[in-house]
Image (cartoon, rainbow, N blue to C red; front, side, top):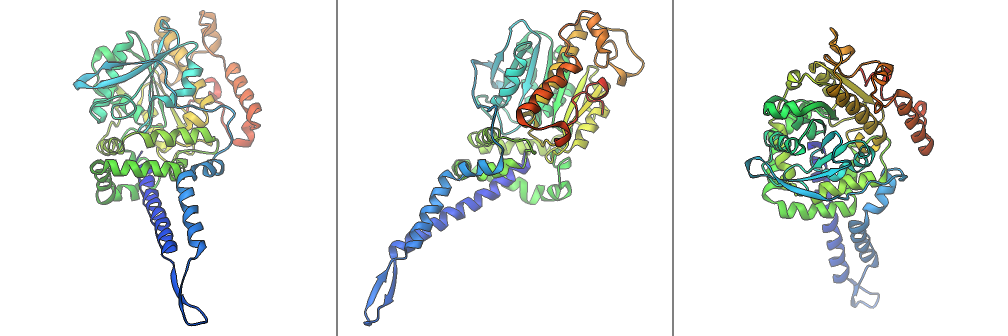
Length: 445
């Protein structure tokens, strides 16, 4: 996202100055300083503090991320990992080459997960593990990131996502984080009817419906900086990619990348989660990241979800400064069958720091969405009370009576939350975490 990209560039400049100071101290130490001794003779004096200062700066430039991770995040009980499964490259539209992985039972209903910008499909580590026992979980890399190659624009991403949906060969629920949610909205608006008909539900995580500069913290300032500052910086990153990439790796080693990405997390972030995010944004090409930011600046899909007649869940982080919760509320209000779940204490990367709540919400939503594809229920006059022609909002007992044994009950979800809080010694009252489905619904806002 633009805020993190800008912060990393600014901290990268400081990192360069840091190294320049180390070089100066080494040079000044070995050159020494000429002074006159009591006998009146000139002697060269070497000041050891300059040597130790230079060595300290160099050590921090290489190892600063280690202490900073301990200072910026809490310890891990369940580490995330930037690991891949067995994937495949499929042909996408416009000559794209798309990296796709499939996890879980091959004959199970499919969830297609699209990651946020600057990341790749390994960010779904927790989701793959939590959802792969009952769903076919399909993850893929957006072009320009990870192992996928292709055009970088929201329209191209939507076409690529459509190809992945076709590849699954059946009905799907789409899940998208940040720019992944933006690609889904573009697909809903512009996609081929046959592809859109495969989509039986949509989950949008921490995303927006327009240029993210309009729905982030300090929006007036960021929009004012767009043309004179932000866009020129993006083009510098594109033109000077090898140099910027070198500085990005140096920023990862000295911890400035972790400082920048800490802005996207709330109170629950752990060290592995912060490091995973920082690593992905570092190893992805800065030129591609810059092109994606430019594409977002020119994007708008206001009210695109109005044309989607299936169930749609928007998950927002109460402390999200990258995409304010009001953006999610606007999407929810535009969707005919929209619901919103707001999770307190989490920021833009809530899918990591509260993966338990996010994955529980995705799972229950998907189970109900797929159940009502197979077992349509009578239409209701009030779309907010459930799904017209069947969907979310049905009484849980009715679902169970109809034989939908896969549906999570509220008690099951709350039991999972109690177990989580027991593990982390955090209680909902202490941390202000709302139950995932208040009033028996899926996050009715």
